Amino acid sequence: MIARIPTATVYGINGIKIDVEVDITYGLPAFNIVGLPEASVKESKERVRSAIKNAGFEFPGDRITINLAPADVRKEGSSFDLPIAVGILAAMGALKKDSLEGHLIAGELSLDGSVKPVRGILPVALLTREEGIGTIVVPLGNGREASIVRDITVLAADHLLQIFHYFKGEGELVPFVGDSHPGPGTAARDDADFSDISGQAQAKRALEIAAAGGHNIIMVGPPGSGKTMLSRCLPTIMPNLAYAEAVETTKIHSIAGFLGADRALIMKRPFRSPHHSISDAGLIGGGHVPRPGEVSLAHNGVLFLDEFPEFRRHVLDALRQPLEDGDVTISRVNHAVTFPARFMLVAAMNPCPCGYLGDPKRACTCTGPQIYKYRSRISGPLLDRIDIHIEVPPVKISELALDRREEPSTAIRERVSRSRAIQRERYTGKSFHANAQMPARAIRKYCPLEGAAQAMLEAAVDKWALSPRAYHRILKVARTIADVDTTEAITETHIAEAIRYRALDKRPTM
Image 1 (cartoon, rainbow, N blue to C red):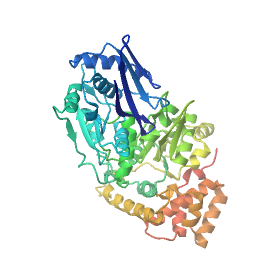
Image 2 (image 1 turned 135 degrees about the vertical axis):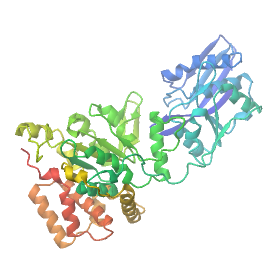
Image 3 (image 1 turned 30 degrees about the horizontal axis):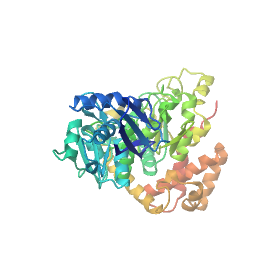
Image 4 (image 1 turned 180 degrees about the vertical axis):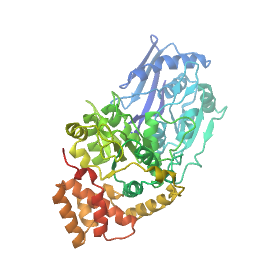
């Protein structure tokens, strides 16, 4: 007798429908799983056998064959336990096949028959809707996460017996309704706020411009000047997450296993701050079964790299492709996986190894070659991809002692959101929606310069031998400055401010 149970596996950030086909025939006792199962799927045989026995059923002593179709897609993870167990019960005749129609099932089983949550249930729930399957049955710990998806019924259980009684028509499963999840997300809310930062008006202005246009930024300053605190405040001035952005962000964190039973839709802009000892696979993503790295976990948010030159050179250079394309493709022998990685890069570094070059009160102890070696750890092509370079000087004690009310993040966020709205309207129908994402052809169309502004930009390019990419970056930043000032024309003033944000291009090499 054959039973067929729909389930899914996750490939990249998307779900792929898998049919669990169960066949029980007379013969010597055997339990085989075919269809390119990974080790974790093969191990499900023992979990399913024990779960069925400990739930009070007699495990069939015949030949059991499980086929995971399509057979040419590699299957990985423990979410096949539950559909395999339900399929065996149906093939035994304990459940009617008609009662299983219109249900997709996913979950891991414990040996006692309890159902445990799994990673990546959100892409599976989205696939359920795309396939026109009306109901998804998930572990109780995944119920809130699956309920993010609209237009499907989400039922959850914490034991195999509950699911059995539900399909027998003798009980109910826990329904999850996502009525509290739709709608726009909110910007990050935590203890960090721009009102807590005294002084640093230029750095705050630069971060506002960066947030308004989605620009990458690097801050250079001595220890204690406030670079880290400024960076942690950046998400509080970024525009709210739209529902589609929040779902896409949550999918990535779901696959990585960072969502708990008490978390559903991620409403805050991600802020990732990996240590400088991270590997290239940890930053970009990788593994035998590719998993998202920090650049993908920071999608739609901020990737903060403190002590920027301390990262290994090949790790930093791996950032060049995602910074340019907004995604990461990880290739293996038989397949390739693409993860989204459109983030704002915020880097912080000291001006020299000791950190006090240019400090008015502490003398720098570094030699010229040491300073050159330190700065050369950041390659020119990577630096070209960072739109805004600013110097963050130490704050004077007199400024810290002032009882002055600084502008809060909410006020800055209003201006940033207004600028983003201008950009969305300007780029309606385009594949990009922020100034930082403009391709070269769009720059020519949307960044026309007046005569004096053009002359100023050309003079700066000649004086500091800027690359064509740096030239385009200046134009993009100038476009954003004009948007923040709510003016359509890019003037000489806007170009002058954008040029000022290329501090590292103006430094001598030695």
